[in-house]
Amino acid sequence: MRLLVTRALPPRVETALAARFETTFRHAEAPLTPDGARAALAEYDVILPTLGDAFRAAAFVGPVRARLLANFGVGTDHIDVAAARAAGVAVTNTPGAVTDATADIALTLLLMSARRAAEGERLVRRGAWAGWQPTQMLGAHVTGKHLGVIGMGRIGQAIARRAHFGFGMRVSYFNRSEKTLDFPAVRVDLPSAMGADFVVIAVPGGPATRGLIGAAELAAMAPHGHLINIARGDVLDEAALIAALEARRIGGAGLDVYAREPEVPAALRALDNVTLLPHLGTAALEVREAMGMMAHDNLIAHLEGRPLPNPV
Image (cartoon, rainbow, N blue to C red; front, side):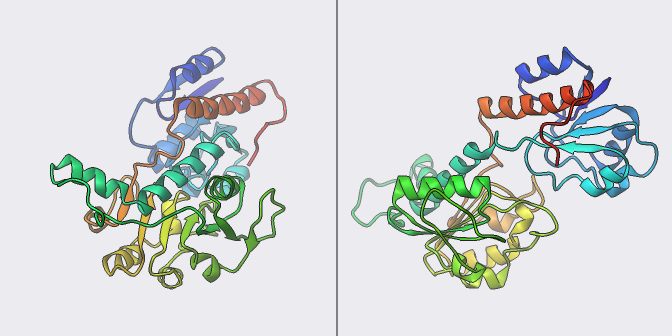
């Protein structure tokens, strides 16, 4: 069975895959283009795609040899799942493996934005720090504040749990349905959640959430509020965020994702009240290994004719 792995994975994962499949490892930095995705579907039996690989509807037009896309990651907004199913191609993902690591990055960004850590680090690096002063770089206190979570799925819950038990934060959340939780939290409408001291976007990507947070939602934020996005870049209107940050209408922001990755708008990079990370949500070796082995298990189940462990 011919397998295409679209980008480099940890050695442990690649070794396991090569032991069971006739494997082609595409060690490239850029994701598959639409033409590349179409060609892969015609040439390989199974494919292990990663974030950004363009398996849009057009990729499934024409000959399709592949019968499984074992996605490396939870989000499948880069795959047209309906078009895949129509072409007889199953799709799996890696839920659970990414939850804690992504929640950790959300808290990292929250703390960095609140305490102006990136700005302070740049100050020290350029040799401009004049020493400790009582009023230097005063940021926002986190402990005991109000957290608004947009999207209370696995990752949203992991973020809220850390915030409540670790920092004594009061939690409210916006979600399509009520959740049964093991910590106190109140379900509210979107404007109310946006009005918290700190707001974390944790919804899945895709058409249903694209542009969910725009100018009107940002206007509902408190002047001291900080916005954190660890979901997908296109959930947030970047132009509206830039306008809010430039006008100092909100306290700050922390981003790990962008609408057109790896492009980050110059206007955003120029601001000192936003913390920018290069999509580090799951960037820990043991996490990436766990993701890869979960994709491996989905592939092996397909190879052996068993039910797929993680169908989308």
